[in-house]
View 1: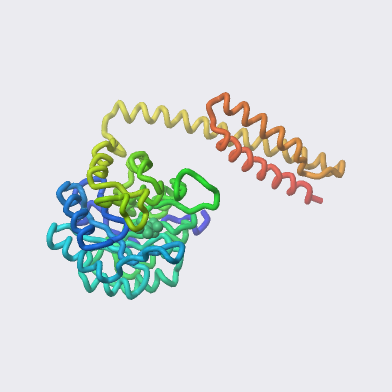
View 2 (view 1 turned 120 degrees about the vertical axis):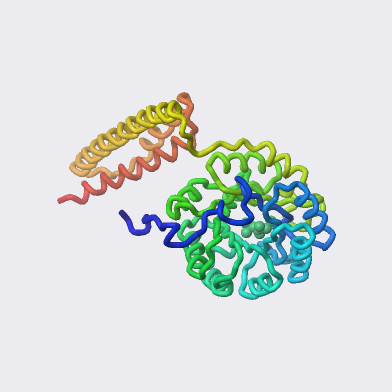
Length: 371
Ligand code: PEP
Ligand code: MN
């Protein structure tokens, strides 16, 4: 096995299971609060409503805001830490703040925050991460690590490792999606498989979904939260503002505390496993059918590559190029048409065919190079 595919045991990283965290009452763990702390009143009224719901485990509010473009509201700075302390004392609600530099960490710890999160624009940078991890050394705080803005699993894992090595054990990953150049309905593409792979690489790492930054629009929060629950995530980080239209940052994606309670109340929670023998028997039977089809797929791919190699040899004998674009386009268009009639999406068929085609070219190249 490729060494970078090796599983990193949670025990080796000494990450404490989320159900042992004192803030954790039940699944999902809920982290909620405004994108930014804006004023004492806004912070306190939002916190009052969230605390009254009894369903929020951690209150979040950004005070140093990493804005993509200059000239926007960049947060109230350290002044906001006093308001967070007031939230903690008045409502007995643990508080979390974003940190991006050593100074932020010192300030946050000085004001007794319970948790910090590392933003997506920071987790891309190993220097920043190391600086933050060193400043946090052995601190008694929960640390949430957002995925880096770019879809790079190694950077995300590296950030978690740096914090773990600094003695942080209440450590969780926050999946907030990845930015892309292409326009899409989501602000950040979920790429769920990256978070699933993270969980495979660090088994037991608590995984939180942030549907607010993923969707970028309050309309998507319910569906994305449900999807995260169906994928067995441990918690949700959702931006909630007492009056979203007046928010100074991320206005479109924030929801009121009442709306948040509706989202949470509508979630369908399924359990990841069961002891029911009938269920187990049926699912095993169905899984063995899947295994049969997967094996068939592999056999078919093997045969297809053998034909590709024969074609490669034949083209070589006749001095013909490997790539013939018109033929490739025909193959792809036909498959897309046929696949759509079978209920498969055009994106899926194109992705699979492109991968097969690339592999096929590689096989043809190999035989072309043979003496
Ligand atoms: C935030 O949580 O307000 C934030 C800035 O998030 P992200 O780092 O995911 O963009
Ligand atoms: Mn935000």
